[in-house]
Length: 230
Image 1: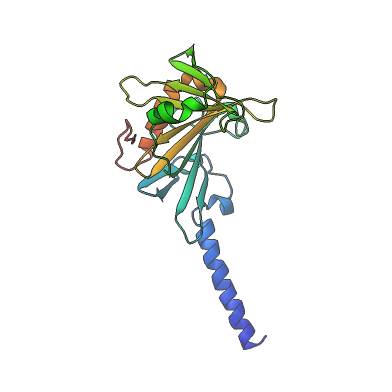
Image 2 (image 1 turned 120 degrees about the horizontal axis):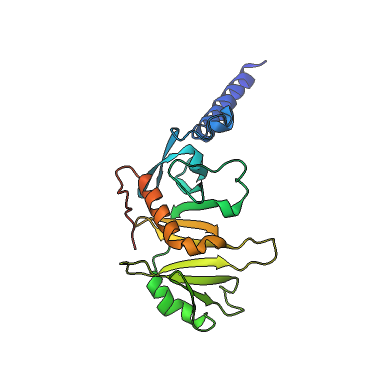
């Protein structure tokens, strides 16, 4: 084997080793297997924009990060109903009605929920909303609008200023499950979007409180009661 070829092979091996370390370093379970995939003592610290999180690895579904760039999104999955220390079982991994999904990403939207209800949505809404109990009002969107594939549910937390908005997909057969989502600002630069099966919508207060407490517990030095920006 000639000298130049050995040099090229050495450079290639060094490059692949670097890529291997960068990609698999944060995910040793991809190499070592999932024997300890439910071990909550295995923690990963990740920084997204202006927030740092220390997250038990069993909660992490994915971390979207370029090899030489910052983290763009953190996807978490926990069981619902959630109790501290519980993780999604293998049997429930594909059951959307038993999972609470939380995505953390850059906050690009700064319009308040009150402004949306007063200035943006009225032109798209199909009449006034209907009170359905549990402090929820249901609003349907007009056909042909950008929001016609969803239903808007509006609630108000006691003592809170802005309304709470839930966007739920309209079930079409069995292809699209009826999922709801809530956008929750965490910091000036980080937004959480949590999703759940529509059948749990009546538990919206428990969902809201659980997500806030969970995210607060994942932030070093953060308040257990949550520190969330409007």
